[in-house]
Image (cartoon, rainbow, N blue to C red):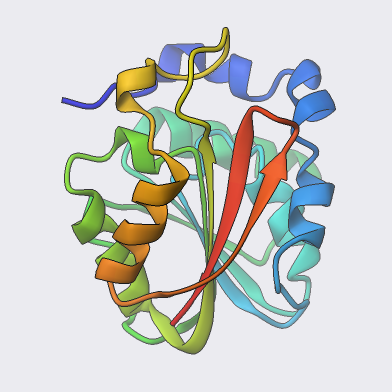
Length: 189
């Protein structure tokens, strides 16, 4: 059973030190997002990426999805502080995203694939929500021992992530290193 992030530790996800190693604006600059896109932040947590993504899609919409009520509430509170109105918070299940099929320009998943039981099904559900040509950005920890992150046995290697994405019907586009601790993999439908 994969390690699930404890919502009681959500403040760790928002710590200012995290931005030193994982700058959301730098990550967003690496993905093919546009201001008018309809995007889902799948596994949004307390909104570390949701808020910068929502600001970027100022003429579009961000769906912030999570399967933990505590995380959605934390994200809701942060969104109300910055007065963003282009975000819809949605509770989801591992393979059930309450978004119409083929409606998204992009899907963003930051450090959630390693928590999922059915990884291929999870990516297939995201693929179904994408329109033709839509993109999926996947951030994950490198599969090696380090102080941060989940247990190494739960991590998803770059090779496995690529194979899972392709098995879910996505086309691999690129891979980027993010500060030596994590990677960004980009797919297209």
